[in-house]
Length: 118
Image 1 (cartoon, rainbow, N blue to C red):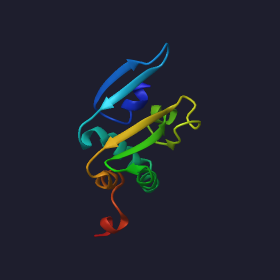
Image 2: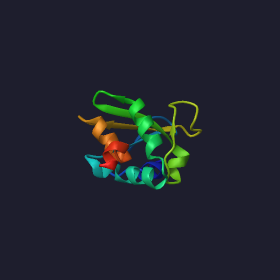
Image 3: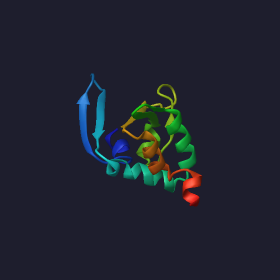
Image 4: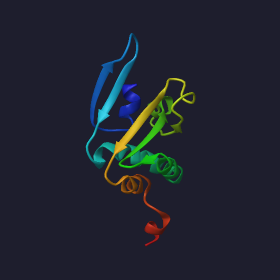
């Protein structure tokens, strides 16, 4: 699980046991550097537009919460999924807190087409 997460994000990794064979792996990052790998993968895999739609659908006041397929993340790619049922090993929960979640989404996905055209 740690590899799947560190393939996508940078920051301080902590691992906590939540049961007999279950662990919570958390990456705490501060600022854009922690999301730089994620941003580059969205661009490399040509899924920025699709990611933009998913991120906006899951944006709340001050945060974005989405789920990622763990097996796909292990391979160094991004695939969004539902919280239950779509990722056989369980999903990775990505929570981004920001005073400007729209700005974060713009940065991650390359902005709106109107902004790129200028």
